[in-house]
Image 1 (tube, rainbow, N blue to C red):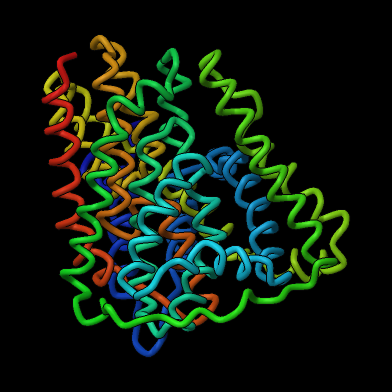
Image 2 (spheres, one colour):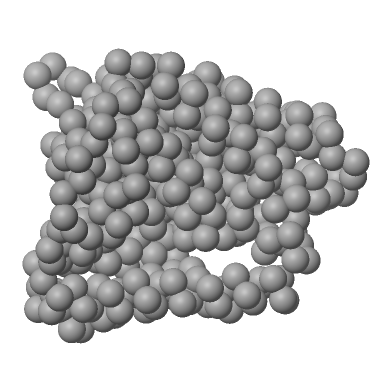
Amino acid sequence: MPSLINPAQKHYSTYIALFVLAAVFLLIAIRQVGTYNLKIWQIMLFGALAVILTGQISPSDALGAINPDVMVFLFGMFIVGEALVKSGYLYTISFRFFSHARSPDQIIFFILFGIGLLSALLMNDTLAIIGTPMVIGLAVKFRISSKLVLQTLAIAITTGSVMSPIGNPQNLLITVNSGMQYPFVSFAIYLLPPTIISLGIAFLVLRFFFKRDFSARALTHEETPSYDPIKALPVKCSLAILLFLTALNIVESLSRGSLLVPIPLIAVFAAVPVIFFSSQRVDLIRNINWYTLVFFAAMFVLMESVWQTGFFKSFVSGPEFTSISSILIASVIISQFISNVPFVALFQPIILLSGGTTSQMMALAAGSTVAGNLTILGAASTVIIIQNAEKQGETLTFFEFARVGIPLTILQILVYWLWMLLLPF
């Protein structure tokens, strides 16, 4: 029996997921429907429900698309982050870290380079969770623009994570799937110098766009904030576990080129002291940012639906996309639409089939990560920052982020491209 669906309708149906993705981008950009102010997680949930209800992805595929490693990692780190805030210990850490800053300019500099360098050692999403209440606290205390500190934090985390194989999920994926030996050495040679330069460029770009908010006025640091040592003890144990297991992974990676403890398990182990020994465990679990977990689950569903259309696969299937410049450009652009981790999963096999040189792998790591500086949706860590900020009554809109992010990303990509051209191998 002949099909009653004409070819034009079938072709249109195939790309419903792309129309939904475009609508999600538009709504996140404007965040306003009539008098109703939409949240990012609500928009992404709408997108996921739309592709499921229109049959663009089956319920079983939608469920399978949700990455349990990411969800477990975020859940564990949200618990640790909430415990840090509730115990007051986060503000003690913040005071000790920023007490040497003598002006708002130096606060921004410390966020960029301090948190940027830390993000190379701790997974970037970890610092997004912990860092958001920290920088908002600094903004309130020292009368600095909350938008400036939020964007600085996002840029620091994204840019700093470029230079390490464990700085973010996509770098970890590249390291594991390419069979790279001594990945910390390769990342240091190819990506450490341009990343430090890129952080310096970020400081200058932020100073240009937020010139009214930069100031040399002297800051007064009060005494170290007090905290309840009993309430803080479980979270101190959590931080010790987090740092110890991360250090084990770094040593294992340097010696054998692999990770000893899976990243999600680090978050689980770090959350155990808080869950079992904190007197506030029920309130902590109730108050973690559940909306961000909804956002990520919905994002996985929508991105999988878009992936299944094959639309973006056609853009990266030819040999012309294996040069350093094309890898960098394609990574930045396409990562905005299907997220950087799915993009790396798509693009890395193509590069490996073409020879898979270390420089190509490093270009893929740099481009897919720096893509997070372009728009809000370019990096999961940025979404976490904005969702957590909105929980505290602060936000950064799509256009506010992009006006800084677009020129910054162009400059940073040029730095990585030029550095790789200058390398003699």
